[in-house]
Length: 318
Length: 318
Image (cartoon, rainbow over all chains, first blue to last red; front, top):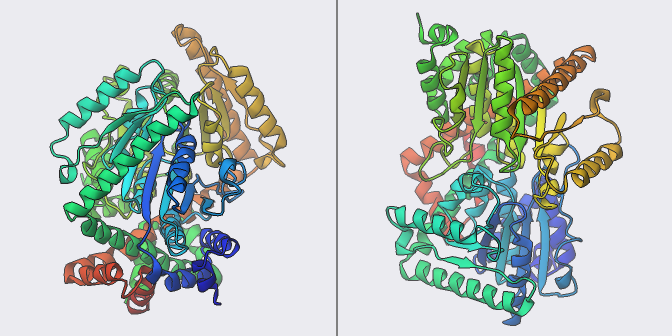
C-alpha cells in the first residue's frame, strides 16, 4: 500500500506524521495531499471557536461522545497559537480529552505553524483534507485565535459555532466581532453565572439588528450550564447537535452548500498560491545571499521594502 | 507641499486618510509610504498586548499621559480584528481614550484590514512608518489578537509588553504562549484581585525555566492595581515606563537594536513581497475569468488547489 492508501485506510501513525510535516511546510507532505484530495468531501466540518476559558474543550468532548454514540468517526483539529521560537503546538495532544484516548474512532491533533511567512490557513486546509480522506464523518475544528487568521480557518467549516461566557468583559463582544458575523450558532456557556441573561439580550439585539440573515438562517442562541451534572450537560449538547443538523439541512435546501464550496476552493487556491509563488522566491534570495543585501538597504534607508518588492516582482514575475 | 510633506508636517487629516487607504491596500498609498520611508526610524515603538478585558486601553491611556508630560508626541495604533463582511475597525477611534481627544500631540487610529488574502501585518508596518514620519516620538501598538498575526505585528516593536490579569482561567497562559516568548515586560493588571499572587508565581517559574534570557534581559513582572486611585495608578505606570527605558538601554548597550532592525526589515520585505507577487497574479486570474474555471475544477475534484497553484507558479514565475 502507498502512504496515501494507508492513510485512507485509517493509519493513525502515518496521518499524524503527515500533519506534522504539513506544519513544517514539507514539500513531500504537499504532494501527499494532492493524492488524497480526490477522496475528500465526505466529512461534515464544524468550526468551534470562542474566547479563552469559554469551555470549548468541554463542549468538544461532549460533541465527540454524541457523534460516537451514533457510530460516527470523529476527528478534532485544535488550531493553536504559534510559537515562533520554540515552534510547535502549545496545547499538547496528550493532555487533551483523555476520555477518548482509547477510542479508535476518535482522532485528535493539535496544529500550529512555524515560520514567519505564515501558512497557518494552508496547513489547516490540508489537515482537514487528511482527516476527511481518512474517513472521519465529522471533523471539529477548534480555534482559540481571533482576527483574520481565525476567519480564514473557519472557511473550512460547514457550521461555525461561537462560544461565549458571561462576565468576560464587554471587550469580548467587540473582539469577537469578526467571527460573530460568520457564526451560524451561538452558545452561552456557564449560563448559570451572573451576566448570562444580559449577554443573551445583547446577542438577541445584535441578531435583530442584522439586516438580513444569510440564507434566511437566523443563528440560534443556546444556553449551556450544569456541567456539574454530566447527563444534563450531554442533553444540552445534544440540542446543539440538532441545531447543527438543522443548519446543514438549510445549506442543502437553499443550495448554499455549492456556493460555500466554491468560496472554500477559491480561498484554498489563494492559500496554496501564496506558498507556491512566494516560497521559491524567498528561498532563492536567501540561498544566493541577496536577501542580506536587500535587508541592509532597508536598514540603511537607501531603499524601502515596497520599492525592493516591486523590483523583485518585475524580475521574478513573467 | 506634496502630500508626503504635509504628512511629515503633521497633517492629521491626510495621515488618517493614508492609513485608511493602507487598510484598503490602495496602490497610491503604498507609493506614499515609499516617499515617507526615508524619514522613519526615529520613533520608539511599544507593543502592548493582552487578553480581552486585561485593561490595555487604560494602561495605554496612562502611558500617553506619562509621555505627554515630558513633551513627547504619542501615536497609538489599535490593531483590531478584521471583519471580512462589514470591513473596517470595530473599536471606533471615537469611543477610545476621549481624554486625549483635544490634545494635538496625540494621534490615535484603529487599524483593520479587509480582503481574504490577509495583509494585516503589511498594513501595520506601513501605518507605523506613517506615524514615525509624522514625528511621533513614541508609538504604542495595541493588539487584541493572538497567534501568528500578533507576533508578526509585534515585529515592529522595540519592547513588547504583555498584560495579564488574575482569574481569566489557566487557558490564558497557554493561549498567550506565542507572545509570551517575545514579551520583554509582563504586567499583572488588577493585581488586587484573587489569583494575582498565583499568576505572579507562575510567571516567575516560567521565567526561571527559560534557558537563557535574550541579551541577558530577564523580563520584569510588574503589578498594577488601584485604578480607583488614579494618581497611584499613574505612579505604577511611571514605573512601567522606567522599565521600558531600561530595556531600550539594554538593546542599545548590547547592540541588539541593529539585529532587531535587520529582522524587522526582513519581515517587512516578506510582507511587501506577498502583496507584490501575489496580488497581480490573483487580479489577472479574476479579470480573465480563469479563477472561476479553476475554482470549478477544485469543486469537481478534477484537480486540487496545490496542483493548480504549482501550474500557476510555472506559468507566472520566471
